[in-house]
Each structure stands twice: as C-alpha cells, then as structure tokens.
Image (cartoon, rainbow, N blue to C red):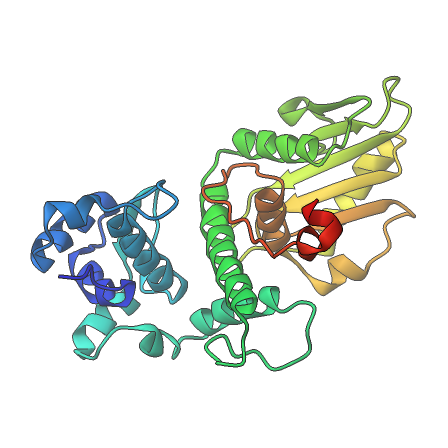
Amino acid sequence: MPIPTYEHWMRPLLERADHTPRRLRDITQEIADAFGLTEEERIRMLPAGRATVLASRAGWARTYLKQAGLLELPMPGCVSITDRGRAALASNTPINNAYLRQFAEFRAFEERSRSKAHDHTTREIQTDSTEDTPEDRLDAAASEIDTALQSTLLDAVRKLSPTSFELLIIALLKAMNYGARGAVLHLGKTADGGVDGVIQQDALGLDRVYMQAKRYAASNTVGSPEIDKFSGALSKQNAQKGVFVTTSSFSDAARNAKYNNHTIVLIDGDELARLLVQYNVGVEPVRTIALKRIDLGAFEDEGLG
C-alpha cells in the first residue's frame, strides 16, 4: 500500500501522544504497524537519501500539529499532547490542514511561509494555483520548510542553558563574520553590568561591539527598561555599539526609544531563528536542488565547432 500522507498521520500521532513526553521514533513505528506497512515501505528513502519517507511523513505531521498548538515538543525528538490536542481527538472530526486552520497560530504559520516565498511579488498568493510556475511551487515549498525549521529551532534554543545560549550567539556572530579581524569573546557571568560578550572588530580592540543575550519564553516581551540597563552597561564600558538578542520579542517602546545616543541593534526570536538558518548555525543542509536551463549558446553554429 502507498505510505499514507502526513495528514493521515495526524490523528494516529495525537492518539499515541500523552502529556508525558514520548519519543516520536517509537510512535512512528507504532503507527507503521497500525498501517500494516511492509519492511520495504518502512526503509524507503527520500530522493536526497538523508531520511526515510516514514520519518518525513511523521515529522511533518508533528510539525503541523505543533504549529496549531495540538502538540508540544518538550525535548528534542519527543512530543506531548496539549489540552487542545485532547479536544481535537474528542471531536471525532478529520484532523487535517483544513481542521488546523481554525487556529490562529496555524494560519499565522501558513502566512509566514507564503510571504517568505513571495517577498518579491505583489500578486495574491495561491500556492495551489495552476497559475503558479514550477519555480513558484518550489519556492513555496522551500519557504514552508524553512518556516517550520525556524519555529522548531527557536523552541530548541529556548531550552538551552543561559551559558549555552550565550555561546550559540557568539557562534552566530562569528558565522556572520563579525570580529573577523579581531575576536568575539564570551564574558558571561564575569561581565560587568549585564554584558555577555564583546566583539573586537579589529586586532587591537579599538572598535568594539558589546552583546547582551536573554533566553526568554515567547510570552516574555523585552521592554525599554531592560534595553536602558544595557545602554547603561555600554556607558560604563565607554562603548557606543551594542547588540541585544532575545528568544522572545521587543515592545514597541523598546524598539522606538533612543538610548543615550548608543547604537543598539535588537534581534528578536524570529529574526534570531532566521539568522541561525541563514548562516547554518545549529542546522545542517540535507538536500541541494540544482535547477538547470538549456545553454542556447552551445547550440549555435560556432558553439558546436
């Protein structure tokens, strides 16, 4: 039999999840047993050869259910059901993308995916439209994968220890080529005034950028008082430039305030996740698709000689 689509995995996955975390790998095998999948179907690989079709279908079902708030990811590789997920099971209605769209979080996830795929166009987005070119559909699929990855990545980052989080930000800054001629140093608890790191933009440390990293829950908005404290720390260091990174968000007041003429760049959770993916920090490429077109010059007379 064909391996069921990821939407067909949603209800079985919810049924086997619990409030106590369970490994997705174990649940996947249980569902494969329930579907009666053969050994050949269980080991069938994706074209890229980096994962099985089975794991991919289970993974996307998990991702969509998580985006809709029906599942939580309490630790890497594990899932647990939420009260909303329990209510979905009790409803006895098909659980698929159409069902998940009743939740604002899932609609926002879909919209983020679409908007990233169509940043450079003003036309209405119709990802399933026959007017879309294959390149449009490929862009939309890549954007959806990136959006899901960024959300999962941010969840994992929020579970890091404070020190590990600070070191992750240091790694990101290095990957972005900051401190290329100098150094990016982790200060952590030894820092004065809440400064977690310093970027020396030149070998002599004459041009320095200070960093503050706050690992907060999504609901914990960073307000202007915290940025004001960071600005005070910059003054103590006789510094003019700072980067404040959080896994949550910033209030409008924090974004719009002027802090003693300091230049302070604010990076929230969404932007942090985007940068981690862009600079391959905490992630790894799994598949590269090379799009080719005919070289018309090769078929001209002089090109064939």
